[in-house]
Length: 313
Image 1 (tube, rainbow, N blue to C red):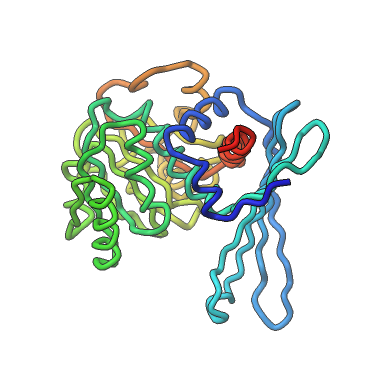
Image 2: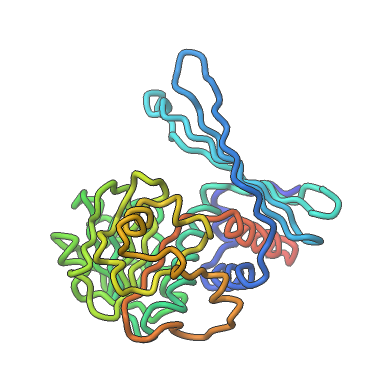
């Protein structure tokens, strides 16, 4: 069994290869049992929530990600979230690798957004707007560059200093990076708008978006969270990475309840992958991708790492 820390895991997940691994996994599919949520009572402190996310392919690999969330850790000077990923042989049960779960999650999330853009964003898209400046936001430009000719990146975040720091990182990576004074200013000219925030109220309004642009929503992974207003979904082609996204994300629950968006009209990345499409899958109208995350994506990333190990890389 191999043990890989964050650096070793990251080095084996280059975005170009990861996007293609995700494309293949969405096409083939895998077994996805419901995520299990465990509440661990911790004496004298708040409860620790543990998420257990398994996935496997018959005759292939079986993986389990465990995410532990301890809200009281901030008072201890510790991160509140820790995750690990263990990969097994699905036929023999033999453990193959222990991977850094945080790296798996962050990089597969950014790469899934890039995969969606490979089908949904304008083919010539070169201007990306990023709303947010956290861990996943910092990966989005590099991930999207694996699928579209991204040259210019505009950043907005609630913290101007965090936005400026991200711009500095982007310039060092070879992008033309710039900060925006407002979310509206950031998205006005962008062909791809990617949101990775913890917002509970919309920070993007549909009337701000450029005609024919692609909107990528990452942050709203609970019913109480929301990054986009209803206008973002009106007359747009909407796609998700998971069949249960419409019941998990406040970005979708609200518009569906208000009749702005029809649940049966929402497409999936699996359907796009199985259709074997190349380039933009829709016409010139607006597209929206809502990501909520899936154990399928974790499994694809973990197998890619293991394949690199087996090849001596």
